Image (cartoon, rainbow, N blue to C red; front, side, top):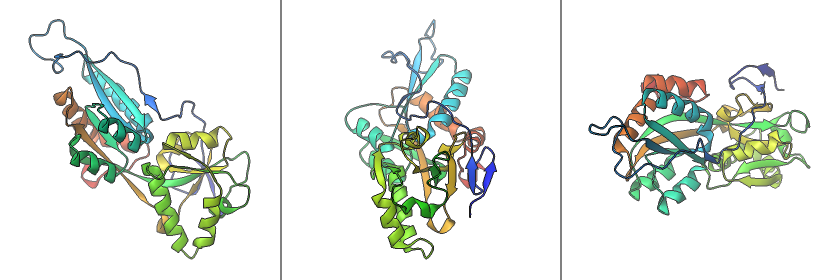
Length: 287
C-alpha cells in the first residue's frame, strides 16, 4: 500500500507535487558570448575596462535546476563572469570532450565516466560532490501505476534512460537487485523490461515523457521529481542504488583560476546547503 504526502522533498512514500515547465535537460543555461582569447581571469590587473569572461560548465542534466541557481549566485559574487552551462547526459558530454570540446568545469553523474575523462587527460582533480537516489515517477492522471508491481502489468508504458547514461545504468542495477529480491523477483523484472517503450539520453527527457502523458511511468532521480505533478513511488532500500556525482576542472580550461573558484564555492558549506535544497545528499565532510 502506498501513501500520498504533500511536500517539497521525496523520502516518504508517494509524493504529489506541482508541474514545472521546462524540464528538458539538454542545451545550455543561457547563451553568452564566447570568451575572448587572452581575456585573462576575473579581476586581472591591467585590463580596463575589464573584458567579459565566460565560464563554461558541462553538467549532468539532473543538475539543471540546482546549477542554474548556483550559476546565478556565482555571477553575483564574481562581477564580469558569465556562467554558461551545457546540460546533457554525462555520456553525451563525455563524447563532446573526447571530440575536442573544451570546458572549465565538468559535473558527472557517475564515477566511471569521470574516471575515463581523467585517464584520458580531459578533466583533473575530481571531487565527490553529492549523492542521489532513484525513484519511479508515474502519471497520476492515468492511474495505471500506483505500486511498483504495477510496472510489469500488460499495457504499461515505461520509459528509462539509455544504458550508457548514468541514470540508465543505475536503473539496470536496481532491476538486478529487484530480480534477486523476494518481494519482486525475476518474473516482475522481465515484465517491466518488456514494457519499456522508450530510452532517452538524459533523465530530464525521461521524466518529460510522463509529465506530457506519453508514458505511464519512468525511473528517475529523486531530485528530479521535486515540484513535478507526478506520483512518486519510492524504492525499498534493499533495491535502491546510490548515484554519485563528481565535479572536476577541465584540463584545458580556458579560465582555470575562475574554474577553481567555482568548484571551491560549489563544494563549500553554502554550496552543500544549496545541493540539499534541491534534493541531493552531500558528503559527510560537507554536512
